[in-house]
Image (tube, rainbow, N blue to C red; front, top):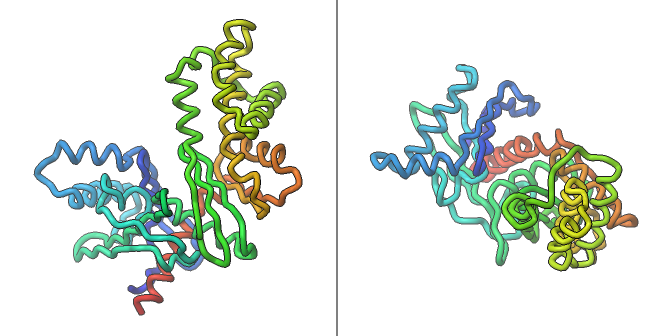
Length: 319
């Protein structure tokens, strides 16, 4: 495969899609478009359209979305990662096994050519013994271009399903998923605690309650403290705003308790407002441990960098 001068970077997740026209050599963004037309919504529409095959339906949807980019780029190669390679996506691909190189060697990919429409390079996900991910592997490859001086560490990717990804000697060797974000959503909006918590702008008092929750979660007291939020509301008319951040701290503290015995560098990469919360957590819970905080812009550009690295790796392997 020949490396193109420009390509379309496509991060197609469960709930949204992000398209960027990238100049391959400089990684400059020439145009971009994002939408909430995620894999889940497209799959649901596909199920109602029985006259088309799954790949054809997703491919047509992708082409329609690409039309939001400038005309001169609409026939570019599209590098697609995320949920597009899942059973509810464009084309299901097997997970690659660990370990895999930070160059992407070891991942699975498939080049789908079309004489009249854009070619698609579809990237697979990765599996551990009892865990899976799709999309984060490309992000990690991109992030590692920044972390090239580090031989060993754990990379934290907080979100709805937070990932802790371990790398060693230029390979991704292990990862684990924590449903921290989804649990917070369920507990704060759908559980008995929903009437006892209420979001409000961050304040010094918010931080105090967040840190209190962090330390209790870090001590594995999550389940013992959850109902206390409800009881404190009923018996003491406690602040629902403070309880909101206390709950957040409990969950994040419990998640991070799983790396308390790790002595290696901790690297954090996510977007605000999670970035601030996890940064406070690392400072509070790991005061004597080396860690690095990557900013919002790094997270946004990581997938693009990962796609660029994969293009070069695939071209070399197929040369």
